[in-house]
Length: 192
Image (tube, rainbow, N blue to C red; front, side, top):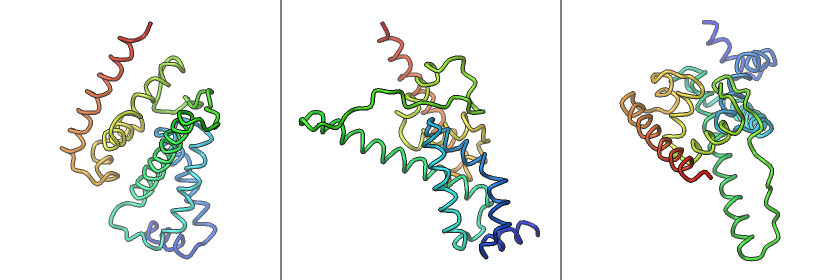
């Protein structure tokens, strides 16, 4: 009953409901964004976009899934949207550099945040290598792997967020692990 009232208060744009929304979900949303985009400033920007989207779309939320699942779905989609835009800009920058355009290429490292609760790796270089490898996975594999292995969600929770069956999740995870193994093996084979 309390959750129905909370949803109603959100739909009516009550300040107390927005405060509760931030209290309950700010950390979770930020960590999810950080799982996909391991740069603190970008993850914060994406998280802010997620909350704007929640506020703008709450009236459309039908309640077919849990509110938390819907929020995770928005977080994942906003993160993937950001990655797609960033990839497009990188390709554009690369094409500009080939064709003589003078767009400077940023040589600084992008990966700024490795205090993510799901990552307990010993050094930043390995973390960066892992996130680069995860980023090379096909999108469906990347989403499932990140939600399960980095964010620690169960298969059932990943299924709810991605709207995929458990067998589909298992298959995508299996392929993601195989692809990561290939990517990382190739990297270490070519390392001087």
